[in-house]
Image 1 (tube, rainbow, N blue to C red):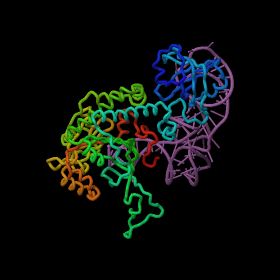
Image 2: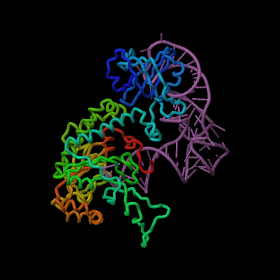
Image 3: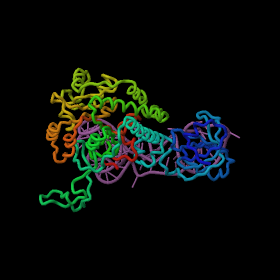
Image 4: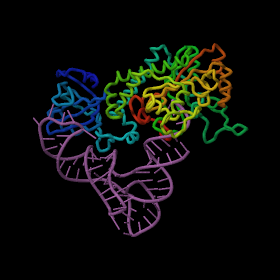
Length: 461
RNA sequence: UCCCCUGUAGCUCAGCUGGUAGAGCGGGUGGCUGUUAACCACUAGGUCGGCAGUUCGAGUCUGUCCGGGGGAGCCA
């Protein structure tokens, strides 16, 4: 008999049919002549209750070994449960302890553990309810991202992990080298001699696939990337990782408005998909992690995002009664407190801000006719602040080189990027979002280290 | 990089103004014919993060180092 997965077993009508299952013991309740064991196999949030009568073969041998965490194979009949709390249960006829789990030093117990403690056992924490749910929702969200873009005709592009684009204006890079660190070859001038390095030049791990994505968008029309990204910043916060996943669509012949429409449709699609695909896990988050998660997601689904320029937003903030730590003035970069005030107090729904001052935005964003602002767009949501950042890209090569000079970038390193404007240039737009931040928002989890397997963050790997 | 908080049993935590440690869960043993974080009884388990200092006496006060958490900035 093939083993069934608990997710499927729980959908069956209990009719004393034969069942085989594999999984891990979550909890055991033992009486004199029988025992209840709850088994989880990761296929869903729910456990399956198994009742084992003392008359089952080998009872006295295995009963002591049915500890929390032990792996088991069980055969029996699926019967209606006499107890409350579950529709059906398995009446065991055969129980095999596949792998023992000594209870005196197994760190997980059938009790609440703090996330801080679980972070110290990243290899065992997927066995908990919360991390099982996070992992299933992460999977569904990942699938939803691909489905959305595929349905819209976007082509997945695997942009390089090792890159020579220095900095890209996006953050600190991890350097990649095979040079011997205890004996670094030097140039006559005393600098590092990168001509002796593996790639003959200085290289690092990517901080963004956007520039390469633009190259493919200017050929395939619509592309997206969804891959690992690395930032060597010394950030020690609940929303930063050193290694994370980023999603970056890029579309030719899209202006800033098309970009905003895409971002809004994207968020709504993936959220709806997750709610639809993982209702039990989402109920769990809403009950145990953050009681406002479902209603927050509902405000995203049921509202058209407000669109407002940066200048309008500044006016709104200036007339606010709120006491901001950072004073509001045209030209400042909006702080977390400002973004929160806009989305949570003024509008109470998601907002897309556009046309930011050029000084506070990246070099590649298209300059508006006023010469002061660029066609950037940030999607802001409550609790998290900026969830998506994007822009229409500068297509005029002269303006672009001027902006690069302002940003202190060496034009030589971006020749290929400028070629995109020299040869058949087309308006194009795109945006980027951190996958784990979206996952934080959707699950209501508080710390980004708890929504990725084996987190890597500053001073922690 | 800056600021704040914190470190007591395997886990979650209590320990008031200094008088040499407690609970629940988990472990072990025994009891219970249907449990639901099962219940009841008994039991084992801690150089109170490390080091120095103040004191007759430090988990409790001071300094310092190490670990953990949160906020800011940077950013996604």
